[in-house]
Length: 153
Image (cartoon, rainbow, N blue to C red):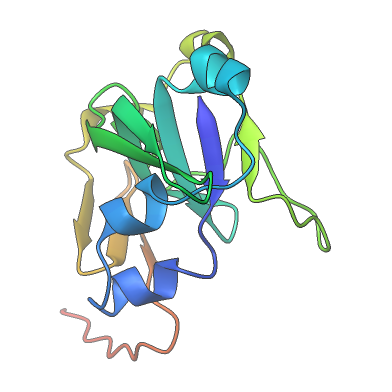
C-alpha cells in the first residue's frame, strides 16, 4: 500500500476545486518499478495525519517526466480507515510525500466497530461527522469553514 501526504492539495478538494482522485492518484515522482510492483495495490491519501481517501489501484502510467499517475476505484476494503488516524505519520520537515506500507500490517487490525459499520459516520462536502455509541459527535470540518451549532431540547 502507498500512503501519500496530500496536505497541500486536500484543501482544494474540500473547496470543490479539485477531485479526490486527482489529489490522491496523480502525479507522484521518484517511484521505482520495484516499489510499484511491491506496494501499488492500494493508496491512502492523508492530510493532517488523518486518512481522507482510499483507493484500490487498478493500473498506473508513467509520464514523460517520470511521474506516476494511478488509476483506481474507491476502496471498500480500506473504507473503514477514512476519517481515522493515518497508519503512518510524517514529521515536520520530512519532504518525501510517499510512504510504503505492507497491507498485511493493516489486515491484522480489526477496524473500530464505529468505522466498520459506517452507520454512525457521514461525510458531506469535506465535513465528516462521527457519532459514538452514546450519541456524542465529533465533527471534522474543512479549514476556513464556519460552523453554527443549534441544540435541541
